[in-house]
Length: 68
Image 1 (spheres, rainbow, N blue to C red):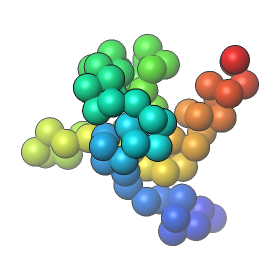
Image 2 (cartoon, rainbow, N blue to C red):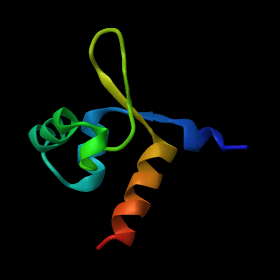
Image 3 (tube, helix red, strand yellow):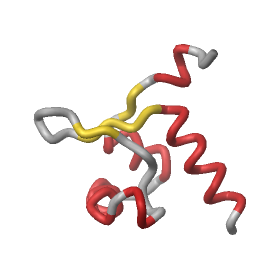
């Protein structure tokens, strides 16, 4: 069962800060979509904001580390 921290929702700003990229870069990646591999699995809220679950980001980062 996932820990509460694993299910924490991150904003695009928090995602960008964690990866050390600009928000505009993160926005471009999110616009490219999950299928491009440039952006982790996420959900879009009714107001259009994007949220990324912590465990989804961790999985995405693990995958990207393994293909380097």
